Every structure is written in structure tokens, then in C-alpha cells.
Image (cartoon, rainbow, N blue to C red; front, side, top):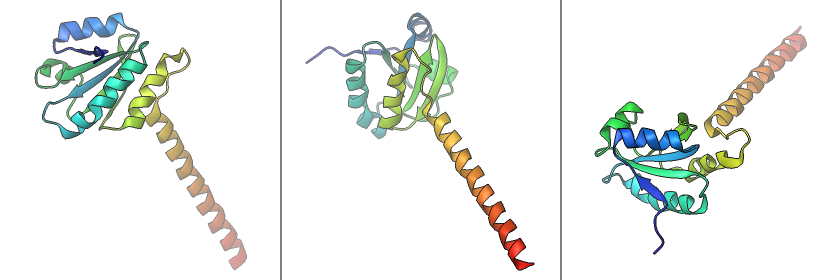
Length: 145
């Protein structure tokens, strides 16, 4: 069996040192009793093997409670993307698509923030719906005269 590419860190000082030394780090905050954490763990390991330019870390929220507390992790799994030592993005839940999107930051261009793109698209749809309603009301009011 191949050696794991995932670091297990439960000390706050070790964690902070690790994220400050590595340009891109994806952290999986998990609990041993968490079903969704167990289901996504093999995929997390697979991404770590396939993406050596990114460092992958697992933090057990019970053993590393000080780390989880500092980063306000309240649900598991929570994935946090760190870039140049600072939190860049996060999501909670065993979502393979979002986790995969985190691996796209190593390409040197602008990192991909999936939830921001989704929020922009949602706002654009809302604005479009408001414009359609306004135009419809305007046209109907002109026809009623």
C-alpha cells in the first residue's frame, strides 16, 4: 500500500507552522464518529496522491480542539483552503465537487472560489427575474390603457 500523502496534525503550533511554510494547504476537519467524514476520506487521500503540489492535512476536531476552535469549525467535515498561510475559502459537508475545486488553486492564476461564483450566478438570475417582471408589468400596463 502506498504511503499516505496526508499529514495528520493536532497541535495548534505545528498546524500554524505548517500552513505558513506551504503555499497551498487543504485541511479536512473531521471526527472519527462522523459518517460523512468517513465517506469522503478515501477521496481526500486520492486527491492528495494526485495533487502533490498541494499539501493535504487532516485535523481530528476532538484531538485538535484548539485548532478547530481557532478556525470556528462547528460541523464536520469542514474543509478549509489556506493560501500563503491565510484562510482563503471553506465549505462544510462531504462534497467531492467542491473539494476538487480546491485543488485548482495551484495553477498560478486566480484561485477558484466556487461559492462566490455560485453567489454571483444566483444574483444575476435574481436581477434577470426582476427585470423580466418589471418589463412584463410595464408592457401589461401600457396594453391596459
